[in-house]
Every structure is written in C-alpha cells, then in structure tokens.
Image 1: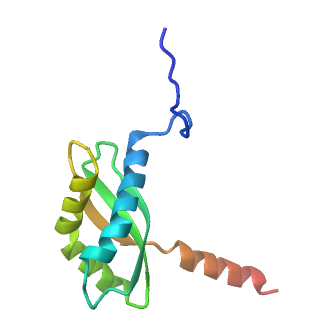
Image 2: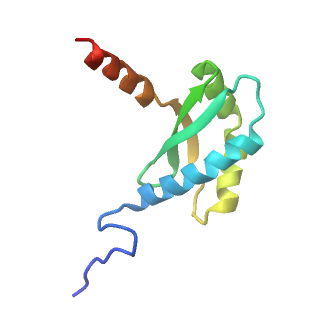
Image 3: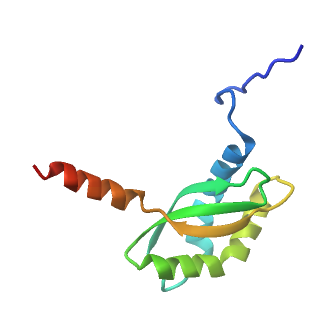
Length: 120
C-alpha cells in the first residue's frame, strides 16, 4: 500500500504546476530586470504565474508602476521569446511554457475597497 507523502516544506496536495509557476515567477523577476530594456516599461513586479496543468502555457501577472500597463504588457510580449529562453536555461522541465502577460489589478482593487470602507 502506497501513501502520498509530502516533501519537507510542502503540504500534501501541492500540485506540480503550482511549484513550476513559483519557480517561473522567481526566474522572471530577475530576468525582466536584466533582459527587457524598453522605454514603455515602468517599474515591473512579477506578482504571480498561473501555469497550466500540462505546463505548456503560463499566464504571468505583473504589477506596473510609472507607466501605462498596456505599453508594459506589449513590451513584455515582445520580449517573451528571450524570457522563455531564460526559463529554459534555469529550469529542468520538458517544455518551456508559452508566456502570456496580464496586468495584476489586485492592488488597485484593495485600494478601492479600503477607500470605500473608510468612507463612513
């Protein structure tokens, strides 16, 4: 009889695509600073990566400060092949996921909710 046992530091049921998403986020956080030099970019923070269960695609959520998000997302989309090569050189996975980028609006939503709650 086999039992599923979590590795140290991981809880049971932690899916592989979540682990790979976290690893991709760490690689991209460093790679964006080094590889993407575009005037449309402001201060970019990679907030999350949602990898598909088959690991062939990944949606990268970024927070953009100091520039319009549309321009920064276009610059990141143009730099996607270089970023994918960076992922391939750092991670040992069968396929390098195809990256798509989306603006993370969680900060804006939190600010709006906080403002609404403070209005008494």
